Length: 236
Ligand code: ZN
Image 1 (spheres, rainbow, N blue to C red):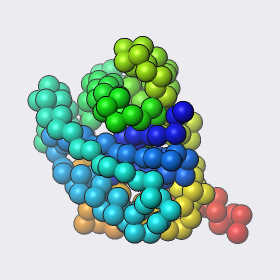
Image 2 (image 1 turned 90 degrees about the vertical axis):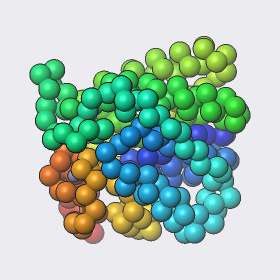
Image 3 (image 1 turned 135 degrees about the vertical axis):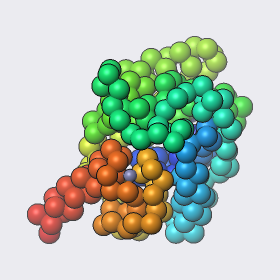
Image 4 (image 1 turned 30 degrees about the vertical axis):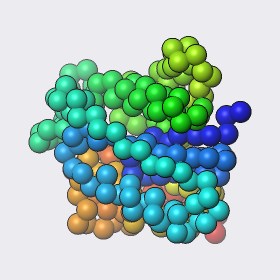
């Protein structure tokens, strides 16, 4: 029971860490990604690179890592007017949320993931949402996802578990978790091959990986990496 998982996998730092977390724990792990007309297809490319590198670098994980599913959610891009799906600059709205917020995105992602999990016989849904170092998106919060777990389980008459291993970690702790699970190999893979930057920038290489270095996602990733490294230096 609950030994088969479906990981919401975008090719970013958080979902890659969650994928490794799931591979350490579950007998069978599949991945799902969503194409919703993101401004930059670069994260979708990163997904393939990360999956290939995990298979090659960890034969023990390769045995558990099953199919990758890609879902076209173009309708979500057409519905929402955000800086992630349009060529607009990133700013904060009057309600305090950045204009990168895609309303209802995680609710839809989990609902589609649950529908796929039902068909594939998987009962754990894993997502990299976090309400510690985050942009304030209401659909990343623990209570939102707990209520969604109940709704999906009732609506499909199937006990589904929503796991969010990063929920209470800050970004430094997320780097640390990757190291605990997969050692330096995984930390290097995350630096080199995952993508977090809202602007899709991959020309500039920083100590923490590629990105513009200035958007809210890059700032969180850079700050988390700096804190992770300084805590490590203090214990060495
Ligand atoms: Zn950036």
